[in-house]
Length: 92
Image (cartoon, rainbow, N blue to C red; front, side, top):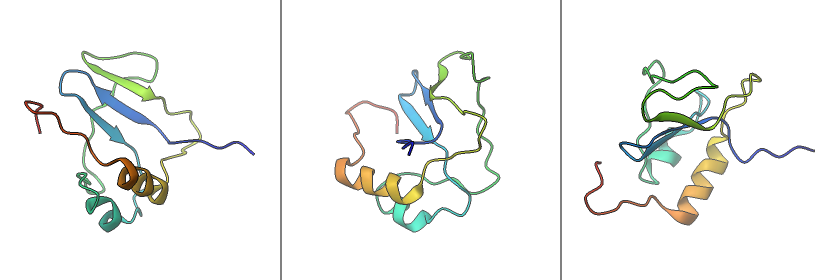
């Protein structure tokens, strides 16, 4: 059995942010309670091509073409265990 820790993750080096791609039916209440912003279905996320970066945007975990996305329950459990890290002076 192949276990994937997450689906695609997009990162921006300039703003020090990351975006985990979750299924549209994700339980957003569980994730919102952890202190992360959940964007609604249809929100536009500008992404570079899989094999290239654009400016400071690049893929930490590239889409593999299967449509696999991060499991929202696993994401919420992992982030509850660690919590978001916000450094002083980091753009919010």
